[in-house]
Length: 321
Image (tube, rainbow, N blue to C red; front, side):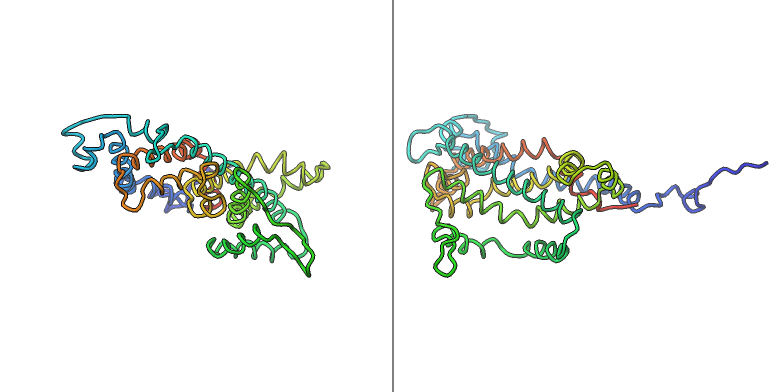
């Protein structure tokens, strides 16, 4: 009896090159050239942010007289800019503390609502057979090309007059005041985010092993139980990826929040106040830099804490083999 030892293909044995697409991509991304390019891009991308940070801790006369890079030859440090923009009492100061809370009140529900609706819709479109499923998915996918600016006027009309058909009121107008206007912003951001959220989560959910789903059904699991116990734990990277996208979008949004929540102190987010601080001439540089950096802290913390899920969620299923 003779035995044979499996051998690699001649080309792979001689050169040691990866034979799969994922192996070739991984090798190119780990090359020295790719590393150098990544470092250069990271440095160039970080310089403006670093300059913003340096400017935010410089006195007003220094900011208005020379560039931030002169800080290293003539270092002058102060935290008065941050104290002024966060807790200042004058009308020209930032008073960002309350606006910071407004931004959180707008952003967190605007992330959770589309995630909840989109994950359920994506599961239904991926694993529940019903008539017109494919056409419904195509229609949802096509909605991504519609600019949100085109939907602002119809949404405003919907909020102000409601929906009526043949003189019969189907849904009354949204007569909201003060903090109640947050609901309009949540609704708008949820509508704008759902097409992309369904598309991203559907791509992830549809690639889950079919045998796993069939085994759960054989054991008598219903769709709600399968979704809760099997699907949700497995799509955490995709949920985190979309959550980061949506959080950054809503946190940095000015247009939607200004239109649907207004510019009052009770509902306006950080972006609205920063735009007001800039004014028509943008001459309050010491406050603008400190306020801008304050607005960057939360998105940076969210991204850095979830970046591993962000990468996994975006790359899942993109490279096979």
